[in-house]
Length: 425
Ligand SMILES: Nc1ncnc2c1ncn2[C@@H]1O[C@H](COP(=O)(O)OP(=O)(O)OP(=O)(O)O)[C@@H](O)[C@H]1O
Ligand SMILES: [Mg+2]
Image (tube, rainbow, N blue to C red; front, side, top):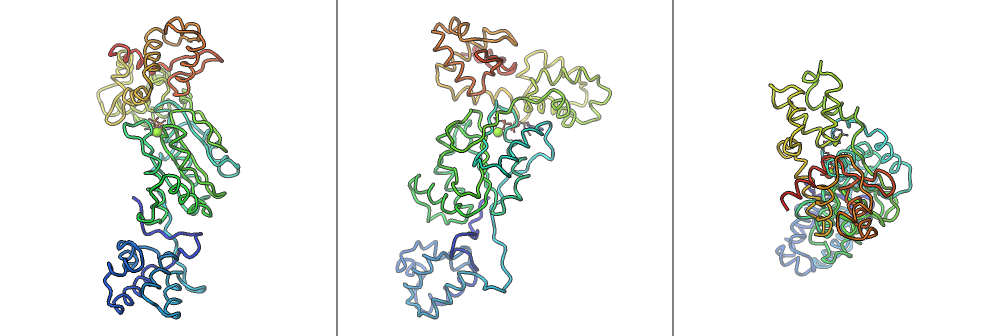
């Protein structure tokens, strides 16, 4: 996935023709009767660096060239020759296109709805000064789909490449910032052995490499601000899209975009697209609206419901509706897509006190009913100010929604999940 053979556009002395320099180097090393190990030791370089320099698998960097020239005792003319090969073709010779990272995963050909949100992300990054757009929303709301789609559309404005890292912030093993930096700097052409051990030094190297490039960075599924902060470039040409199930704040020059579920009409369009037009033609519009309403218009749930219909040729939309009238969460699982499993990951990340509040509130709040801090305080056996803090934290984690200031409400599927969690607790 990551190419070590990247040129470093914009970094002085770090672009060039690795093969030409590699061939020269090999010849001079043999002339000096040195093995690769001996040369590495003499030059104070790692032997892997020498091997890769010789095989042309790495662009010679100015510091390495200097050290090797000294170790081989090259004369002035030879040093010039090596440096010239390392610099690359002279003016007038055909230039080689630099290899730049293009790491975006395949996106959806078209998004249902989301025109406004796409415009917001694109405008912020095409014309706006904000370094970062942070997309937050509940599990399965379509944050990744939006970020990746927007990034593909923005890609031409970032000629030095696009980096993509899934930070697995809500998985069982979130990616450490140091690991994410290692992957990104490698993808930008920095050899692994040049990577500093300390997180701050790695982050500084990453910022240096990006300082004069125009790169779009997508950081998907961030756990929190601490995971994101070291991964932010500082150069004026870079922009970042972050997604998270949590509202992120304190990330400096950023624009927040909270992604809600889809409008009903867009959810119906998504359902029809995935189920297949022939499966929905002739079905009363009201039935289709009812199906997506039972999915709470959540893109993940709508997609799963549609996939289930598509994979059961004998079912009609009515059969699906009847099933969704029972244990919805059990129905909304198909292959690797699973609404309950997605919500489990949010729930499991909560501290014990919030898990308890989530379960109790879910079990004792009627469908579609609002909760305010006073009712919550009575249910949880705590004070109203403390209950409000708990509600706010569940809101930040997108396990509650804000119906009006000071009034909170569960999304139907989240309430189902909280009830289920209260039964097994
Ligand atoms: N606007 C949309 N149009 C069509 N499909 C969508 C849309 N939004 C999301 N989807 C689909 O719904 C599913 C869930 O979307 P996605 O993975 O982007 O959600 P998410 O918010 O990133 O979830 P998570 O919090 O688990 O990372 C995916 O299969 C995605 O392709
Ligand atoms: Mg996602």
